[in-house]
Image (cartoon, rainbow, N blue to C red; front, side, top):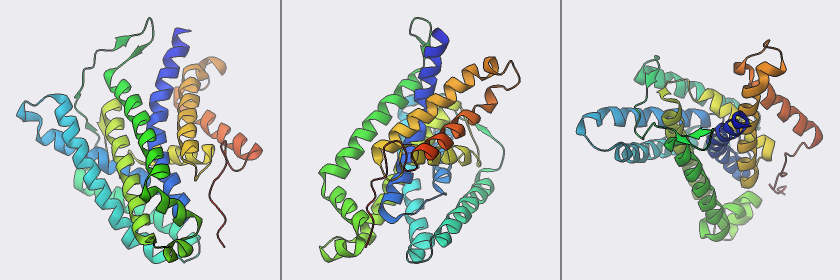
Length: 307
């Protein structure tokens, strides 16, 4: 039971980070029906930017939480600027193009960002400093770290804030109107270009937060670190119902739990044939089953058909 509870904690932490990135995927898809496959690389840029700032300020003697806040703020600014430029340069000219064109462009942008990051930060993995207390907190058998608690709290706060933004603010109404029909929304005074840019910026901020959390939790950063979390987050968005904010959150948490529990029990279930590094099997089998039985995802797609 202790092992099971520990895997639940690990799964919730992992799923929270997936969910933050999945929210960026689902917001962009809900507005312009685009899968931004470069979103995982935004996470990577956020993590490497945070590492650069922390490394530069490591000799100042400031507390770890101050360094984390400063590096997080810098990562958010850099990622927001990056996603804003990517949207304007790579995606905006292709808005009325066949759907295959922006998809291929997104893959190209992903490879470009990886290559640029490799040139700027070099390809070797870099240790991320431990900024928060590392002593685990004993929960009567299972343990949890301060970093993991922070990840869970921040993710919950961000989801609540994002739901409030979408359903209770003028920008949120403009986003919902643009998702319904951008042409009609423009006739009603909404500026679709501004809404789309704001969506990319919000998604980039979420990816930056996830990148810093990922680096702080796993203690290492490198130029290729965004590919697998980006792929898993896209899987989570589809699993929960892409275009649905709550679905992205549920999909991320569920995917994290499936991976963590699978990693904990995969060796025993297969008699030692498969180790914990094959935990991805469970995640993608679950995705196949959900899409076979419910193609719109667990919570369904709430993107309206456009005239």
